[in-house]
Image 1 (tube, helix red, strand yellow):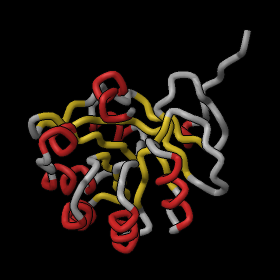
Image 2 (image 1 turned 90 degrees about the horizontal axis):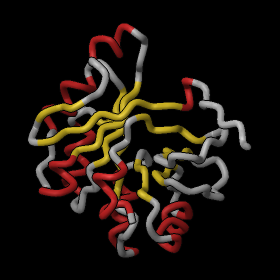
Image 3 (image 1 turned 135 degrees about the horizontal axis):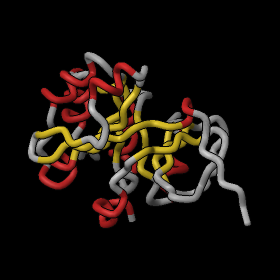
Length: 173
């Protein structure tokens, strides 16, 4: 039987979600601040499923935490507005056309690609993308991997705590 150990705290990141413009978290934000949490991974359901970005919430939360926002924007303007609103990193879709991918990469190096298509992921990496969101083991040297896997524990991977995988199944595949 394999001995599964939790990764060190610096390789784990708490997730919070936004639904109907309300922040939902299993942990109290004040407690997280008190406990020294510095980074959060935000899943914006409104942006993903209704194309309604919660820029004001990004701005409010980013006053206290560094945030990576999973919003899967389809427009460059939404990426730029997310960064202006305080996001440190933005998770983009993993199924983009080559020209759209090139345009996205011109906006920032702080993009995280949802790993969905290996061809697009390779193009992203070739263009300088160095961060991925996945539940698989990837072979990209010096890449940051945000993992929502229930079983993959590997050095260098950042385990996302309370990631709403089941509710995002249609988006993640």
